[in-house]
Length: 305
Image 1 (tube, rainbow, N blue to C red):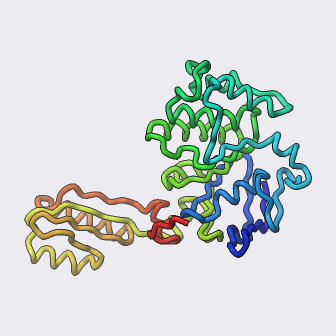
Image 2: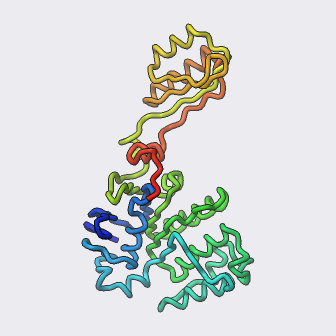
Image 3: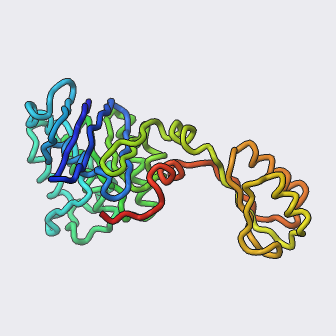
């Protein structure tokens, strides 16, 4: 898929400024952004639900606008909000979605792959949240698409169900399918994505591999430790040597933290463990994550628009 200068406005609101990117077979591209960043607007345009104001969308060199019917046979879509008929069983739901496509479908094989074979004749209203999400993914995969759009596929799931879906998505990548993933879970994007697009207020503000973005925007690591009866001269010496060192609480039962270059924090860690082991406990050194990049670029204030 190749996207060039795609843009969309609703009246005076510019929902998406001109944006360009590509998605290759076997690649997962994650779209990240705060509420109102333009993620859902972008996906809706890419799957033909919303008409862009300008720009082009091509699948294998074919324009979505002139080959829409054929292209929709080749892509799978799991939208953020899926409302299915609750009285249908799992099997009936997959059969319904299979009937929308001209080519061969794989509803029976999906029951096994999605670990839903024992729930095949269970109505949707009786399914757990994780089972429903797996079924929604099955509806997107029933016609064996080569490119799959996933909008918040693991929202509100428990960690076990979320990890199960991560493994399914990884297996889709290994089969050569392209995955476009919109998610609020930064850990999810870091685990699954080959490349990341970070949107903010309708603009693409950063793109690259997760590790590349971490190296570019947030090389700082974070050190945290619990202190006990740390004497004042020792604390003053540590502050002199490591200027980012901060204290929460007091020298008797406080917590110390420091952010900075990983190599310098490693030196601080070794010094704490070697010379102040009795006074410093529960020491952790955390490397920068994609979440740190995201917060640095978009800010920490919650946006409800």
